[in-house]
Length: 426
Ligand SMILES: [Zn+2]
Image (cartoon, rainbow, N blue to C red; front, side, top):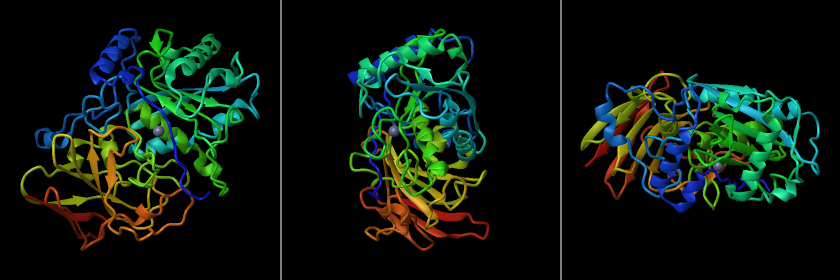
């Protein structure tokens, strides 16, 4: 089917099953006691900006009971998202699904593209260092089916057992304390085809994970099968499941919902990770510490304010204007163009979306405003949500939110490619 694949991937804290953020944080804090001497910082903006006070109303915060929130800052327990991030890659197979091809070939499906993707998206702030100290397949002691892993499987008991077996097999050759995150690249012949069922999953901020070399394997992504859309582009685009899964390791929620990619379309890899390459929303880049406070305009006061935004794919300049409507939600404004990681932009312009930190992962925490609703969109690329592909607003167009009375107008595109945006709020 040419439609966008629906993904179901889990990436939650085990303790979050209880549904209380406070408890989850408590577990994380306990787990961090066991960490080694290597300093570990969590995801989130690093430097305090000069306009920090002005930005405060735009730092919408996470809510109790939300497992993975769009709120700022990202809670502790996730992997750092700036500086050098060391990723341990282990290729595993099973007695009933022996690795086809070499383990190095499996690794080469994801690298160097994944490192390149993060360097481009983060403007060089995340230096992703993939390592594979074990160059052969690590054979698991039980057949694949015996772990009981299926779509939507929780961490317990199958994944816990699998991780324990991986640690046992790899420990003689691997110092787990050297790494910030772990990628388990499963032989593609284990389990169903990703065309039928996407098994790929991340367990993040998981302080109750098995401990190896004194550290819990708290942020671990599993990649199964191959996300091959059949268009012949697998070699170029098949790796994209890994930056999606690693997005969870850095604390980002899923933006697709049970209905698919209809709320965010192809505007963020946490929404769609099949098909042509795409970037992250500016909001996510701020959350990850890839944008400075100086690059954010916060329209929190009544009246009119003008903002000159430079395209998200270009390094430097103001990237994001945010209009808070409450302590937990607001409208984000950014410029998207056909550049950088964005390969499928068919209508460049000003993208406007609502961010709600009280809406949980997979339930639509972000909603794009479509400037051309029910137009059918401007792309026919496979696995790119068509309707929202022409969502950006162009010069002369205005977005209005009836409920809050906020209006956001695109005054014009400047000669240097920047856009001037006027925000009015009562
Ligand atoms: Zn996901």
